[in-house]
Length: 193
Image (tube, rainbow, N blue to C red):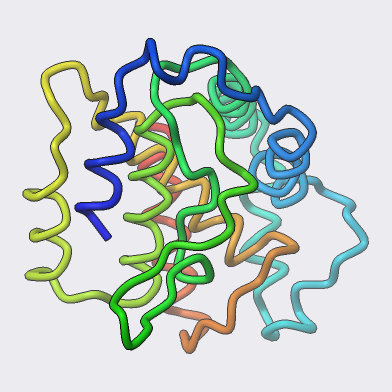
């Protein structure tokens, strides 16, 4: 998985400069990442997902300073970057086959920020409760280079964690309410610090 990202992110800009901006799908994904999870009255009762989750989510949905930071990250997501990104790099786009690993669903790809892509990958490692050894292997094998913004990477990881726990794009996470609360607090810290 990391090797794929390294190869994808290493494609020279002159080869991708005219790549599709893919704005329609990016705007759709933007709403699910940066808008819906943080709306105070979205009509989605999180207590139907897990009793008590709505009260926890309301803490973040009513924090205007936090939501301003989320909006800023959303603007970065929609802006032009310099790296070809898959755009939907999470376990639902990875297939283990007899012929090896296959990456599917490239329709969200665009020229963007690699920090976003690795951040989403990191978020799914955390939500799947990867071991610290697995996590460290991913981080140490990703070829970030000198200009990689690790702070921004973790901010995007925080956004994806929140999206998957308090947003519309729920995952079947086998986590208790306390574990989700802890994960949301960690995600919040990633975003604001």
